[in-house]
Each structure stands twice: as structure tokens, then as C-alpha cells.
Length: 253
Image 1 (cartoon, one colour):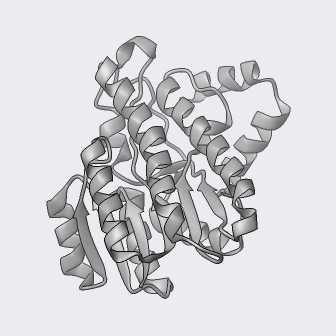
Image 2 (image 1 turned 90 degrees about the vertical axis):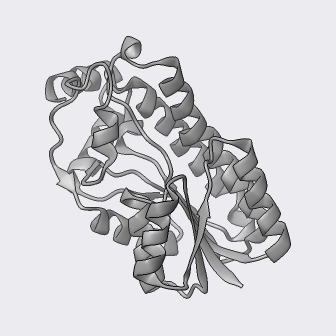
């Protein structure tokens, strides 16, 4: 049975990946994973039997164990894995609680690794992995320090895994968008210092980011970047000292 698995599927980028995979890919089922069961049920109501609802909290070991048991029982062909779960919080180093810091690291990094490793035994040549990175990974970002640092990890891990999996014919594409019009900002600004970042331009649409990500994934690219602004930012981070890039960021944020 050929399936796709999408984490963070209850909203934002994950939800958009589910919609476009259903429309564009030859998939029998899409296993949608998120904590909010009611949101996943709404998705199944909208899209029908192609959706299998898996209300799991990837911060809990028990949820990962349940997924592994299901994979062992059904032995699916995971044609596409999308690791879209994650969140960020704006603020300086002392604006975030220990719980917020731990959850960001655990969900953005550890859960992504465990999900990938759990799925790889059920993937073969021609199957694909898509990781949600961020343009914030291109340079150090004061006032967004923890989230940006987790995304540096995601980008480096994913690009290295892309090389390791070449012999198996499984490309790993890291999606590194700029600001995308999702619920991300509601969570990011729910901190002690919500005004840390206020300039969210230009803003990209999730439909456009996901469409390009799926195209780049099919082409076997290790990174997907949409928009001249984000591509220019990536170039600047390569050629300018990070100290200068950070000063520019602090003026723009």
C-alpha cells in the first residue's frame, strides 16, 4: 500500500502539504499526524477516505511507539514523508521558559529524527522525504535565537542525510521559506516579549511554498527556496560576515 505521512497536519504548512499531495501524487492513503484530533477529523471530512487520522503527540515516546507498531503491522510503502511539525517563539534568550526551549528542541529536532528513522525501513528507491526547515537557518538570529538554531540543525541533518541516502535513491528535500501566511505567528508571538519581531515582509502563501517544495522534491533537490527575497538572503549569508548580517537583521526585524 503506497502512502504518504505528514506530521503537523492539523494546520499551516502540514495541512497544505496534505491537500496538494492528495491532488498531485499517486497515493492510496495519507496518514495525518498532529495532537489536535478535531482538526484532523475536519480534514478527513473535507477530503474523504484517503485521510487516516493519527492523533499523536510527537513529544511523547508513547506516541512514537504507537506509530512504529502500526508500521510493523501494515508494512506500507511510504512514498512521501513530510516532517512539518514544529513551532517557534520570538524573544531574547531570557524571554523563553525552560519548557518552551525544551519543547522547541524536542519537536523541531528530536521528533523529526525519530520520525524519519521510524519511516526509513518502509521506504525504497523513488520515495521521498521533505523536511520543513526555514530561512532563519541561513544566519544567526538574535531575538529568534532558539527557533533559528533548531532549524540550523534541521538543514544540516537533512542535507547530510540526502547524501547518505543517495545509494538508496531516496532524496531528502529541506524546505526553507521566508515568512509564510500561517498560524505560526500566533504561537511565535505568545511570549513574554511579543514585540521582539514586527516586520513580516514579504509574506509568502503556503500554497506556493508547498507547490515548489513538491516540484523540487520530485527533481531530487536537497533544498527548496521560494522567492527572490529569500534567495538573496541566503546569498548574503554566504558572502557577508555573520556579524554584519546580524546587524542588518536587528534593524529590519
